[in-house]
Length: 253
Ligand code: PGA
Image 1 (cartoon, rainbow, N blue to C red):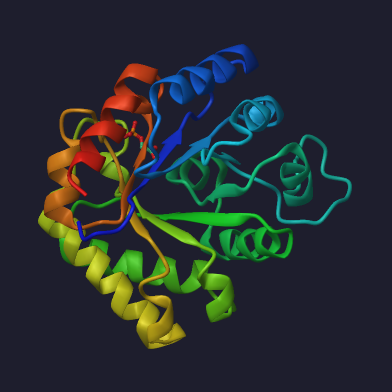
Image 2: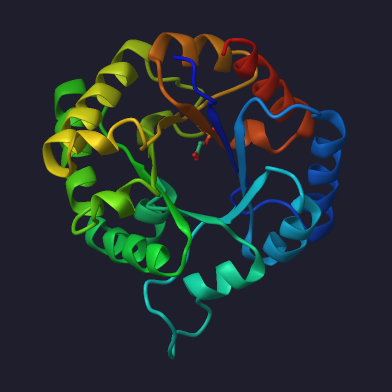
């Protein structure tokens, strides 16, 4: 990757109690003295407040993994963007494939959530990715997802966003996408952003990769694919392996 600070995002999914989250963050802060990467932790709702407190005064970003699209209302069990912000989140993952696949979220909903998140001062980290491993089909699906998920965002709003390309067949499967293909997707996405939002957004919207990233493959992958960072699921749960990913990736930049 070029000479930019990479993004490394942990997606803890439905893992970690408050205590476990805080211990992880304390451990991370103890070990990492320099900050050569933008590091963000997408933690469970219940751990946001304590995680934000544990991360206070450090560049570590704390965020959520989902939110409801409405500002407020009779939506039993849901959490709004304003509540996330109030709890200390600075970003929210939107459109993760598990949300799409298991909870029926579609691009239009993700778009409404992104607009609401922006209105409340949360950065949307928008996930896209295809189910098929057929490359040509995959490229078109990602293009459509981007256009729909980012619909009606102004260039200024788009500059608050992070895009994560996560081919569904690579998530939690041990099947890493090929760096060359991911580089192609990144380039296609950048061209689409320029075409629809103007050239000034392109260097400001990081495009990441997620899917079976580990401490062993992170460094080579990021170099060969030229992505702006990585979204890490399983390998972000242990502090040792997450730190290893941060160390390995930042050695290269
Ligand atoms: P994985 O998950 O790293 O465990 O494949 C990635 C993700 O779900 O974003």
